[in-house]
Length: 259
Image: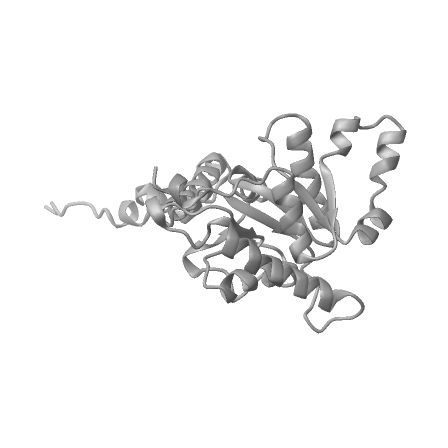
């Protein structure tokens, strides 16, 4: 009589037997989308807290701008780099008293204006953040954001949330569809009171007035006078910093860090 025990090889090989945490087919399935959202939030949040990042200055702008590019590209790049250095030196990114850092430069992590702002922070030895996004034409992180603070997201929504949730200020250099999307995301959050007060400065007034008719929105009753006041302009890196401070940017003193 054959009394051999039946084989369980098929059971061991079955996807259903895999530990859920190691089952990529399951984790990447439709039903786990909410869990993936949570993972993208938690991973970046944990590293930001480890580095003591309490607040950021978010810098948006085109990935297509080059240091040696055509037209005004070199000036835009240079001013974004200079601003990254000024903000990092004066805003609290270099301060580690009490284990916190404020006004840390945060960008989308890619090339162009993003690279320039991260590079300015790196020039003065300050940490900076790169919130990269997975795209069909893969975006690689620029070499100037801090490696431990360089993240990659699948979901634009979670990336935008991390860009907005610690923002003390927003600085927007010339850009295209993506830059406009990010700018109006923050403007809408401010207009509706979903984000706390924060200064918003657009670099190169001539560029922005040629692209977006902010005053026309007011004239046609599409925004209020207070909404229109959310948008400020600046023409150089020092002017950006001065405008941010004049419009309420909080720059903690060493004493405040020690509380």
